[in-house]
Image 1 (cartoon, one colour):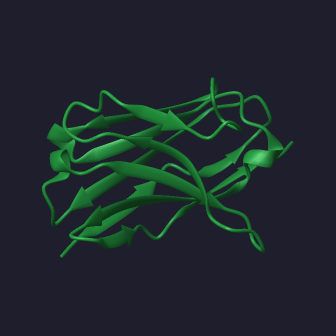
Image 2 (cartoon, helix red, strand yellow):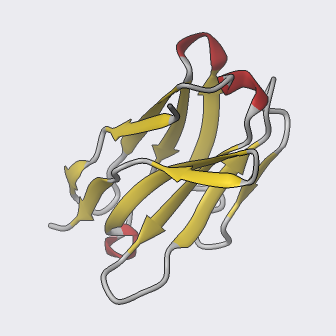
Length: 117
């Protein structure tokens, strides 16, 4: 059974940093492309970043987070990370981890990030 569990969200002041983690289980983690998305109430879910499988040599970011966020993975720990720096109030959202397996997509439960003074 595929399972994704996010953690690391919280309340942070503008300009601050957070690191989100997503632990995967039930699938060969190193073979899967991993994604981070975010969603604000009333808006569509937005893809924030992705990292390729295996060594994670390919990464892609939404324009809104380029230069501030960094995605990485540790296959030994079945974990994908999202390092978020220079956070802005506009980054406030629920952040989700996603992967796909045999054409089926899987999501975690999400972790809330709130950027506010």
